[in-house]
Length: 334
Image 1 (cartoon, rainbow, N blue to C red):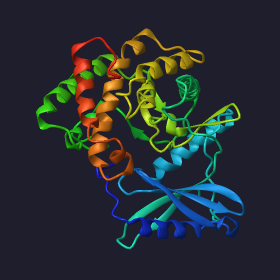
Image 2 (spheres, rainbow, N blue to C red):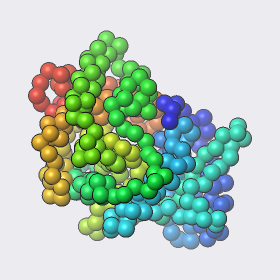
Image 3 (cartoon, rainbow, N blue to C red):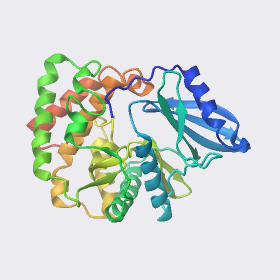
Image 4 (cartoon, rainbow, N blue to C red):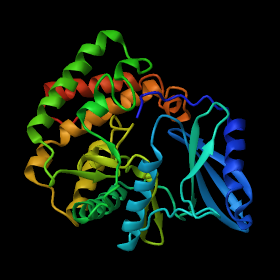
């Protein structure tokens, strides 16, 4: 995987490609496409025969076809345990991951999913929503620890090097917009300390395995009392409690962030236990994720998400790094 993040296709070109993908499916699935968002991938809403579907077009330089097929294998296994997650729809030829040839000789991949109904909670909801997030995350972790992965299974690796080094999957944190070069030393010191802490913590099977890696409120759907999980595109091998850090992605500086973390832990503990060693590492994982997202900001500066965070986001990141280095407080809040 490369740190190249750019997708040179315009919205019109990516929509044309989506229609080409749709032509590979049975005629009953031909309908109206609407571009919902573009980030790592382009996601479309498909309306066909009165039903909704989600079409995901992968950008180049991210996942291989084998990676995507492995994601779908985990989704199938999770559904077998009763966890509501996306289900891919095969083409007329029986393929779940389409290969779309490009004029420049490259390829793009596409997957069509059944739509999952539900309401997406926001940071304005009762903090107890994070208890639901913690509970469903614990169920995913229980499955991950017990699941026998197929021989050909392969997914992205999330460790200290791939998250926050100069050659991380999402680029360099130094390239984040509005990050003052004078503050690079503070962030670099935090990165070094995180690396030391994680080296001592290790990657034992009790603490490191297959995780969602982006399980925040925007990827949680609530429907008639049921908790549903979407967007497994970043799932891979990482520290289990990275999923806690990911739960507050982008909003670690929110005044209620510490309350959200407390509720997440409360919910998780209703299903599975967090060891004392893991609990002690929570501040480290929180700041590592914030720095990882600082790198993401640099490589995704043109996305709607990055633009929506405002010019002070990088200053908040530096402030939280200072808190991590200088105090025993969680690197959260104001």
